[in-house]
Length: 78
Image (cartoon, rainbow, N blue to C red; front, side, top):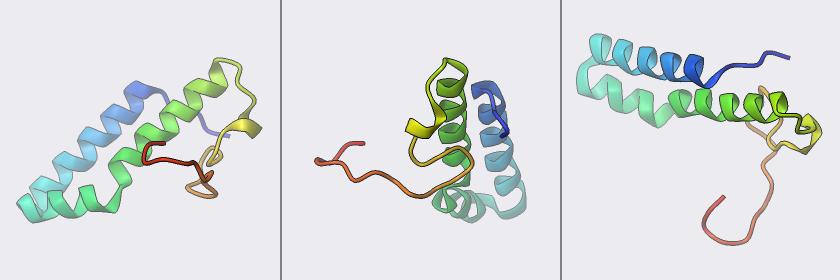
């Protein structure tokens, strides 16, 4: 199990965006954002912080290092 800190996730987020701009300009940046890769770093960091805080990792969905399965929730906000 690899746990990532929120700071590491933010550093990765910035690096992904910066590199996409250098390599592809606005088009590259838009493609990176649409890929969800930057935000998934933050999702993993939040899940990691929950585990570090003592939350049973079996109660976290999607599980660490995974995008699926997500829980079905009523309403428009998760």
